[in-house]
Length: 182
Image (cartoon, rainbow, N blue to C red; front, side):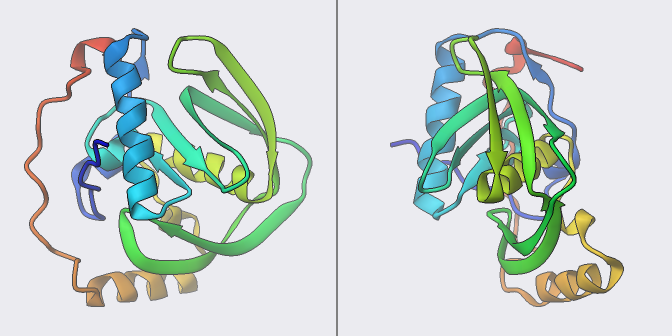
C-alpha cells in the first residue's frame, strides 16, 4: 500500500490545470495504485492526481457500487436533471455542504493501459466524475457554490485546525516526462 499525503486547500497545485498523460506505462499504473490506496485510506469516494501532488489528468473513484479510474477524462451532461446534495473533498477536510451538479453525465477517457473507456453515470458517480474533472481543471467544489454557501464554507475552512498548516514538501513530478500541456 502506498498512501500519499493529501494536499490541502491553499496548496497551489489544487488551483493548477493538470496536463494530459501521453505515456501509459508502469509509472502511470503506480500512480493509479497510489490514488486508489490514498482514497481508500482517507475514506473518499474519489481522488484526483493533483490532490497527491501530481499534475496529471488522472483520477480514481469508488462509490461502493462501482470503482475504477480515468486517465485524460472528460464528460458531457446528459439531460437536464440536476441533483442538490452534500459534497465534500479530501483536500478540504471536515466540510460537507450542498452543491448543485448534473444528475447524469457521459464520462470518457482511458484506463491505465491506454484503452478507451466510456460510461453513463448518474447520482453519486455523476457527482464524483464532475468533482474530480473539476480538480483536474484547478476548480474546487466550493467554487460551484452560491455566494451565501461559499461564504459559509470559507468561514468553516478558516476556523478549521488544519487550515494554514505547513504544506508538504513538493517533490518533482515522477511522471514529469509523461505528460504534455493541454
